[in-house]
Length: 151
Image 1 (tube, rainbow, N blue to C red):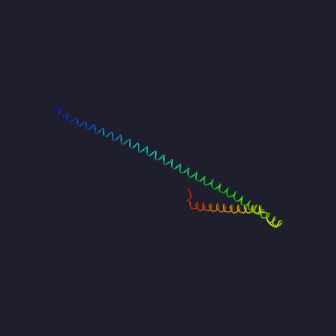
Image 2: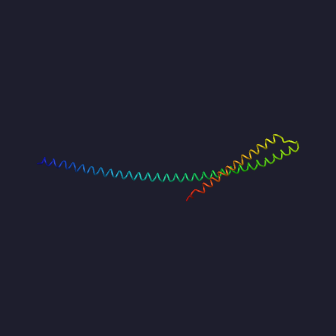
Image 3: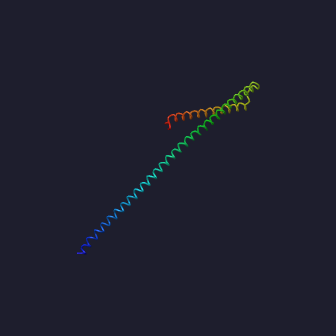
């Protein structure tokens, strides 16, 4: 009878041992899983903060670059306008020289006429450049007026 009792008790004890072993392993696995998810949440939160910070910095850089671009454009436009004004003054002087030479000699000096033609061509070029800059400026103004106001 004792051997039949052992045959019954040993498998029951093994089953109970296996049950508690599996239960303990499941608890440990579940605890590890919770810890892993918590770490993943922390990493995701840190990544979100980093992405938001990067977006803020990019927006700030973009605003600064827009401001620099505006200043450079404005300086370049002023320089071109100054060059245009000076070139128009030079053309007026060259026209007087051509008229004076024509009045004195009966015909203009070809060198003076060529210089006047180059000056007039430069005036046309500068006027086209300034007109293009003005058109670009207006496009930017229209685009900026359509942007939502940042908070």
